[in-house]
Length: 231
Length: 406
Image (tube, rainbow over all chains, first blue to last red):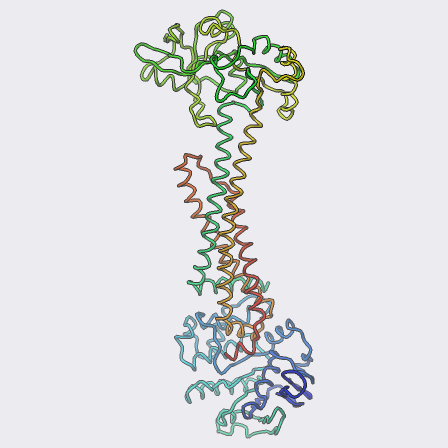
């Protein structure tokens, strides 16, 4: 699913002022894995996520996503990859304001081939338990509900990879639990999920943990499946 | 395919941010409505001018010859022209191959015309009987002057509608006897109304009588005040005018260097000149409107630029779910165009309203001209495109990573 080889990212000019955000990171994620990426701030988590999400390009190294080497794609090609293969879930939900839940879920379809299918968007909302909230604006929804709308949006184009960046960072414990259960059920349906987090409780849902330190992979290990005993 | 979906997104955005959209529209409304009003008024007054010339001349294929070399002001009359243009001149001009027919005219203004106790002072025109056909006019009632009446110096008259109204407010004038400068004439017809001439004065305060009757029984003058020559080919008006001038110079024995003792006008050319002057005014007015439009465009540019800064997060989100730079560019450009188009349409609607008001006040003909309206709408779209370009380019260049972080 994901294969990165000696992936590096350097900001600024080469020399003393340059920052090496990623240093030759190498790992492979197979389809259906639920991977958690952890690390202190500044360890390169965000940079890695941006590159994996095709929002940014590596300075060197290779990135295969779903069999394609996307490390040298143009903006247009990367946009297409994001649209078809990647679903993002952000810490701050990132729903469009003044736009209903349903219309938010529809947005990825705007940029893919085929028409904007309202029924599909409605079905996606129903899958995250918000079928009755389709006409609500983000301001009328709780944090947990907004994040569920974001999950529905991430799923609408049936992506191969779900990238979640601190998805529970802005949620209370109960809502966080709900979102993690949602991600877990997606995992059980066979989706590949890569999650970036600080919180150990969230990390516990994953089956594999990659620890980043100073831009490099410090450890990569399998963690106890369903360690919290949730099936 | 994607662009139509992007367009629908742009339309939704425009309706979501109502205040911004209406402010942007306002600029366009002002520019477009003034453009629509001014260009339509320009066009309407141009048509009105042409119509008035047509009222005066009847047709545009005539040239007018009047005696006297200097350009005298106003209409020629028996008291202000030299006696140089003769009946024989008219016949000679009519014999030119380029001339279809010639009407002879002998006229005077402010002649007292009485019927019982009523008096009015219209223009009296002694005219040849081909006058009516040459000017493509017609009588509304009765008959026009005949050759027989002309040859027998019959005292018959055809009235303009103003004269009819003054002398016969309630009666049927047909067959009644009026007195023109105390000479009795019988009314045999009423002209159809002609409306206003180029100067705005009425053309219906007129009495037509046979030219021979006028020359021998009323005015006692044997020269003409005017002759109206209908040309065969209006496109060759200038050449024909020169031929007529050469003929008259020859007949009047004018030596080569001396000035003409007559004046020839080509009314079609005059009308065209007047209309051109109107067009110049229209150009100036359009310039002002285009400036207003430019200001509207700058408003769009400013507000769209602010919108791009405010909606960075939206741009980031759209990029993350698969929008390329082009799609973002298209969306913001289309938003500007949609708003400009809406403003343009609103401006046209308001413009038509304003035009109706102005044309009513100015007594111009009520017409809706499609060409300026379509031009105005195209200009609105063009303005949206032009001034939406920079903000859209700015939007396309937003870095999604930074935008998503904020």
